[in-house]
Length: 292
Ligand code: SF4
Image (cartoon, rainbow, N blue to C red):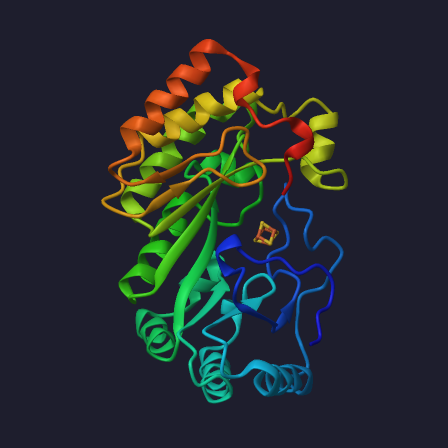
């Protein structure tokens, strides 16, 4: 299999066949993101992709149930191209149940509802969308390239097409200054969007990113671990999901939580209250165990 550069995938795609279709990220401007810095976004040569499908099909064609297409934002590719690719995948993997990919809000909005429905009918089962924040000022500062309204519209269009939607939000991304409004607006956006899964990660400031330079210049101040828990608490308070999972158990988080909405919400808030009140760092994941 041909893998170029850093390969990332959502934790829930751990058992999927990972097939690299594009290299890099079509946006590649988010100030906090180190993943594809210096990499020019491109579609891989068709011969390489076809060979990967062929190799995987011969080796474990009958075992593949899920395929995850990377890198960042395969959804930016033309619908016709994707339909053709999905049809090859269905032929190569007769028991294929779900195709997943990353899609950013701009790419989703470039597709009509009819196109998304067609993709769903041809195998697209889940889209992973990096929401990061529901607050426009935060989105502008981190150069996400869309507003909260556009993010909401994109998420809703995926759901309307019958495709599952998994979103990530970033604790700490508003810094100390915008922490509370980031938490409130993100919770409100999630409530309006009603995604199937929410993953709350905690921002880690990585050397070489614009956010790192802002931090060094004193323009960005990361909230403390307990302030991040307060932020998480406010975000959950403002998030009303009719169903689905709100997961804050990523390796970057200080206090792992997995909340089945709506039934576990009260319990999670009580736990956060207790930890915040006691300020006991024994509850927190040590810094050396945290990772992206
Ligand atoms: S966070 Fe996502 S959209 Fe932003 S640069 Fe990184 S991969 Fe691209």
